[in-house]
Length: 494
Image 1 (tube, rainbow, N blue to C red):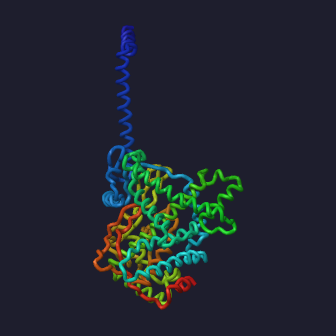
Image 2: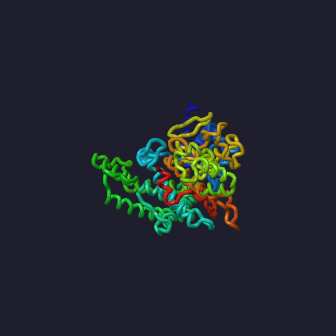
Image 3: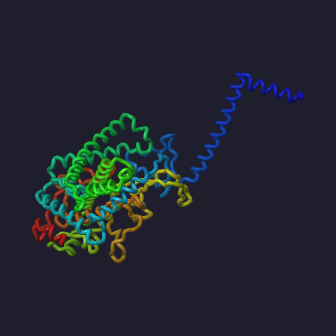
């Protein structure tokens, strides 16, 4: 009885006295917080043990503050230190079904326009490309034996290929609208490269420097969209469902079909149809122009730096193609040196060093490590392409690494310039055709030389969404064919 009375008195003192009650509650909360914190630490350590090895970084920002502007270079250093599979705390983001629907739709339509390696339709695409190749050669012949910047010539030629497919538009090299359009694309690529950290920590977009870059991107995007609106409106005025001319027409036909079937509210996940069209046009155009042009520029850089490799390409072209016509797609199997030269430049330059980000919907176990659901998974293309465990002396330019013992072209599974998996580049077929036809035709028609008093272009690129070479100039020494340039197109695609 005495003990019971004591306990009751103690409880009254501790819990019914306001001052003691607050103290007791505070002690309880502190103790609970400590227990929960310890549990959190144990869970975190348990999760970290399952993750691939990698750097710790700092709170909130993780390793993001150490990445710097050249993400691919820092990632390569981490790969060397931690292995082919490593983790770094940068943030997380999930994908959605809209991307899948758009990709499925575009894949089907692009095949219809000839973006395929099989069947007669590939000749439709070859015709489109060769039209621009011959126009380029004619233009370059007017500046032969002169110090020339190839970038602007390649820009308009490559742009016209993708413009023709997307919206049946063609530019001339002096067209002021094209010059502005091209500048907007280059500016957009550079600006997106500057604010890459926003993908991981959205809040930092409100910092002064990022706000300025974000506003420039918004202005850039709106000006480009104004141009796309004009194209879409013109296509609406001239639309004929029985004559689908390009990708814009294909979208208009799909919208018309969805409206007739009463499912236009479901199309593009209910998003604004025209905004989606313009975004797809922008993505296709930027990717289809910038990456091809940049790779062609790197090809010229490496030919300048390795004239012996250029000579081997030209000797092969002379032997297989002859001096009466330009190369064509059917020649590819008989031109292993030309093809492997292109492949080696794609490997060693890795103009898109980081492939499209993936994100698992559920936890995935790879090599005993757990990749948590919702985490970013970034394929490091340049790290794979420069891995000494996969390639012999990867830093050296060596096209013969893609030849097997029989002298046939061999592309290993770890050659991934167009990415991997379901997010592999949608335009890889077009890219391969363009790179071959443009590069082989230029090599067949001109010898690329360094102008007098011009420095040899370096291998340190300009970092943006792609890695492009520093500005350089060339001298085009003609290799006359036994036919006029005006007849080349017909002979090349007949």
